[in-house]
Length: 96
Image 1 (cartoon, rainbow, N blue to C red):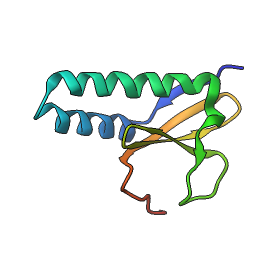
Image 2: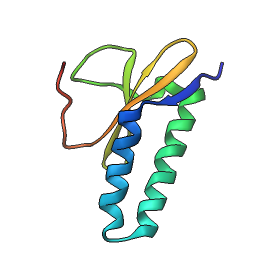
Image 3: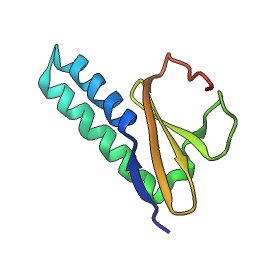
Image 4: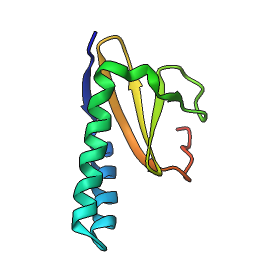
């Protein structure tokens, strides 16, 4: 069953921030990066469980998909996938 994929505002901001950083060197690569991240997120509609559980949380509903050197972090439920954040692979997520 396909889930609906939704991005949170902070996740969109993260994507935009990374794209702006890449665009300083190449607008082409920035656009390609954004497209690749959008496609990766969209693919979660059918295959959400393929991402690994985020080690900082250990919660099976919070997963991450590694795309290039970035972590696309999302929460899955029965009907939705919610993109929570996009961070560099070297970063760790702090618990609130």
